[in-house]
Image (cartoon, rainbow, N blue to C red; front, side):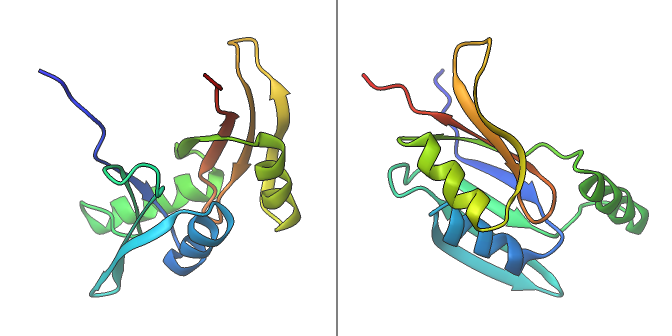
Length: 135
């Protein structure tokens, strides 16, 4: 059996601000935008990976108190985000920094063998970007 990644979900508190960050700053293409009763599911992806979707959502499954718990975790920056590859790490970092993204780590050579940087999206999710390995 072979599995491939299809979709990952990223919890956000403000879908419109998240859309601006992921589409306009990270350069992902908007694939679908669905709203229902105050909730929103925004599907984006990289043009180079048409079979992989990232869904930004403010919907929380569960009881009303679960939404409060998730909101508190988002506010603390405790939620996991997404890791990306960039063909030009320095340019990607400068674009995000210059646009006002919260910088967690400037481009750095990591002990595990990659060079990467980290920023937070508008909801506080950690976004790591590493330099794509050239073949």
